[in-house]
Image 1 (spheres, rainbow, N blue to C red):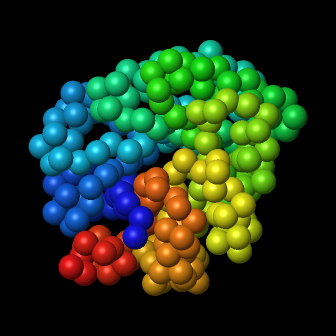
Image 2: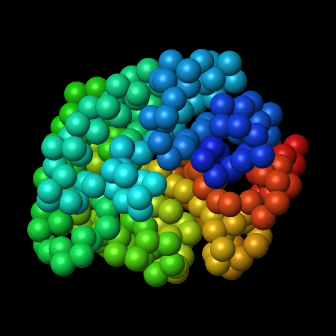
Length: 260
């Protein structure tokens, strides 16, 4: 089975954030991710990782004003300086947390925005960020997010879009963050698209569809997909990024560690 990580932004929400590390470890996870670390001192998060023996597998670059509805700034022509300052901030955290992967959120197409200008900005920013990360041996991830349900107007919403940008960036440390939930909404045919994209996939996330809840609540055949990832030779992390219908512990029937 794949190596499973827990997204602590969405899971274990019945306890305060810093206690979720203990909850994830006790549930059987060995790796964690969350959307953003910047609310807490890096040393505090490092201590939580050390206390629990968990590995930090991923977090996102600063997204702009998340509370105001912004969903990334990597593709926004008027935010280039802010994006690049955010890369340096994320690297400061990544060094302390020993985190090998950072995800860049492309952002939403601005009102009256030029899609081509946003694409070129995104490519230029990703090249710049990839070169900064490469000096420290870190990987930059690019994510496609569905534009039908969760983020209308998101600049990258299919695997084809994301892989096209990755090809244009042309940096070996830029890989695709493949989210089963988002790609099921936009494309379906998950195993075929995973196989087609495998050489450029650096991280996998999942939730069931519809509803973005735990496996077994929707249409995705998770045992089949997880088995296919093994058969393809994918050896990266697979992160649970769903909203549990009840308690997180009650939603973990899919996790092998809970069945042992």
